[in-house]
Image: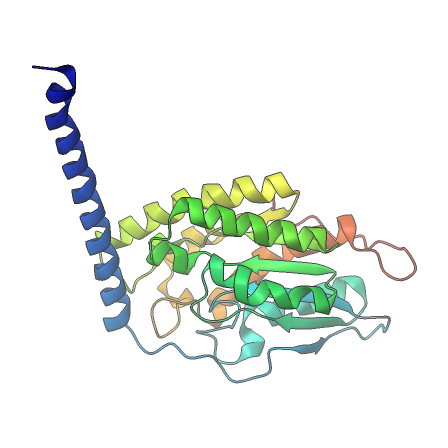
Length: 277
C-alpha cells in the first residue's frame, strides 16, 4: 500500500469532520436566527431625529461626530431617539467642549461590518468628521461572518476613517452572551462567538491607533444581572441600557477629543479620563 493510499482514509475522515463542523455551524446560525425572530417583541426604530446640532450653549464652531454601525446606533429599543447612545454621547461631548456637536448617524439596523464599509463609509469624508464612533459587530456574530472577512472589512473602515484625519473610537463587540431573547445553549454559543470576534476588534483598533472601548467588559455584567436594561424586544438595550452604554462610550469619545481634536483656537479641553483602553 502506498503512503498516498494510506492517507486517503484520513483525508476523507478529516473532510467528513470539517463538513460536519460546517453543518453544525449552519444549524446553529439557523437556530439563532429563528430564536431571534420568534422571541420577544418587535424591534422598531424610535421616533425622533437622528442628525442635528446637540448642546453647545457656549457657542463656537460645531464639532462633527459621525456614528457608524448597526441598529444600536439607530437607537432601536429606545423609547425615542434622544434616549439612544448617539444623542447622549453627543450631549456629553458638547458639554465638555463647550461647543455644539453636529451629530450625523449613518448607522443602519441590520448592518454588518461589510455594510459599514461599503454603504456607510463612502459618506463619511464629505462630513469632515472630527470624531468617528464605530459600534458594530452584533450582526456579524449572529450571521457567523467569517473572521477573515470581518478583519479585512474592519481594518478598511478604521484606517479609512483615521486617514481622513478624524479621531476614531471603536467599541468592542457587545456582550451578546447576555441576551435574554435566546435560550441556552445558543446564548452561550453567541457569547463565545462574540468573544472571539472581539479579539479582532482589539487587534485592528490597536494597529490603527484608534481609541478602543471595551463595551462587553464594561456593560456585560450589568446586563446579565439586570434584565431591565433590555428593551421590550429582549435583545436591544432599553433607555436604561443605552444610558449605560453611553456612559462607557463617552469615555472613549472624550479621550479621543482630548488627545487629538483641537478647536479653532488650538485649545484642548481638559476632560476626565474615560473608561477606555
